[in-house]
Image (cartoon, rainbow, N blue to C red; front, side):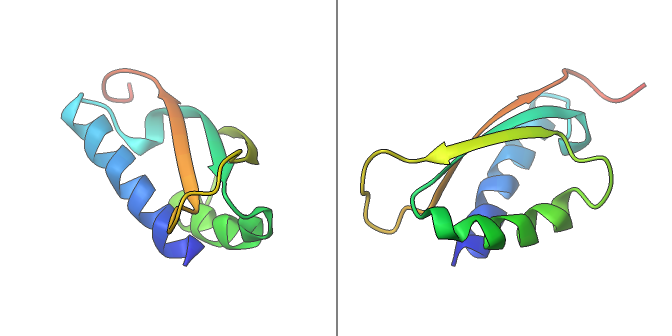
Length: 84
């Protein structure tokens, strides 16, 4: 589902940020690409779990190619280091 793929993508982002000494709390902007525009509602459901308050800025678009089993891609900008 889009919720599962969004969750996995965010877990991947979280692991990368933590390895770099940062965290998902330091995300300032997200670009998401959806393969199926109707998945936006499901994306929002999972998004609210990751960012219940003060979510980062985000923008999105439809992925221009059909890729089997692909529903979402994320590009994230986050501040380096731990929050002050």
